[in-house]
Length: 114
Length: 112
Image (cartoon, rainbow over all chains, first blue to last red; front, top):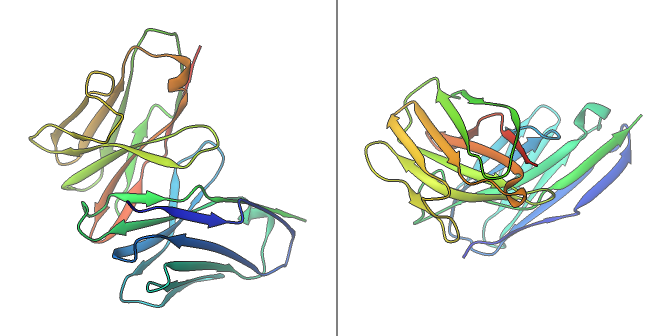
């Protein structure tokens, strides 16, 4: 069974800091990995998708890396802003499982204060 | 990517009643997924909904409690039946285009 762990569970930083959020998964036979953002009481917004054959993806101030062999991914947020405050979820799609069915971590709750 | 419109966005329901959640996708998707997110927890898959066949439920979830309909490739409903306070959660539907999963806005259910 695929298990996804995210560290830290919560993070509080001043505006402008660069951040690293960590995600690990137990089964390296993944199809892809996605990072999502969730605002309180809301749905999920996809931030970055990394295919299993890729090493990293970038979008604006966000950069996600993937090391499939070690079962790890990191989400790097540059120059954090108060608007980045949200919960960040990591999810993997597993080979041999229904494509689109995701296994989620518990998330990292990020607070960026002015 | 595709867009899912999910409604209602929130509801407060009495014990013993039912709530039906609707998801409408702006393009055809083969499979849709229903997740539950209990307070402070991550997302747990309830079932996978295929068009034209019965939904496939995960361990711990049963059709009598969570009946699902999937009448076509752009629409699905999840009903949460015989509500109890333990059903208070956020419910989310999801689909896939290509290799990327996308989600509805979520339904926050409170059972009183």
